[in-house]
Amino acid sequence: KAGVTQTPRYLIKTRGQQVTLSCSPISGHRSVSWYQQTPGQGLQFLFEYFSETQRNKGNFPGRFSGRQFSNSRSEMNVSTLELGDSALYLCASSVPRNSLTDTQYFGPGTRLTVL
Amino acid sequence: DQQVKQNSPSLSVQEGRISILNCDYTNSMFDYFLWYKKYPAEGPTFLISISSIKDKNEDGRFTVFLNKSAKHLSLHIVPSQPGDSAVYFCAASEENAGNMLTFGGGTRLMVKP
Image (cartoon, rainbow over all chains, first blue to last red; front, top):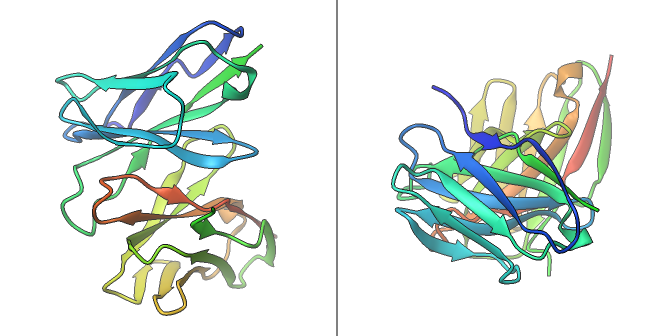
């Protein structure tokens, strides 16, 4: 079974621009979550989508948004980029959590650099 | 407020010996715990998990122990191998928080040949 894929793998943008990142979950997985990893803050939860609906949201400003399509693929968007948005953005997929054994599987991430 | 903490930023172990990575949490609503292994510029790789109804779970060389009263979990790797050298993250989730994971800061494990 193919793993979680994320595109692009690397991205360079300048301050003020906006960016869209894409994630394709493992086949059959309907929940997609996004995380940001930075040296200072570690791995932080951004949001989770299930059945095209945002189910949870982390403590990030409204410049960070996302969506999920009917095929479970997800995109996240960051508008008005700031230098501090430079990070590794990770996508994880899982079946929706309805037991104590569901596990999230991560993609390789998109490395965003904001200049 | 860090709800999940890994107090040791790094750990060095000799090949063949046991590696013990520790994790503490403060949120009593956490009921599912996971360990991930991560290499630079890659996504975390799932290793092993444990639910709050258990106190131990084993998978090959990896064993996770959960002490709910102490709000503490640990990952034991026996025997340690050089290929185990990576950053290890513990993560936790609440039953009513969907798939949101709260991660610790990570412990860099170095296994010396």
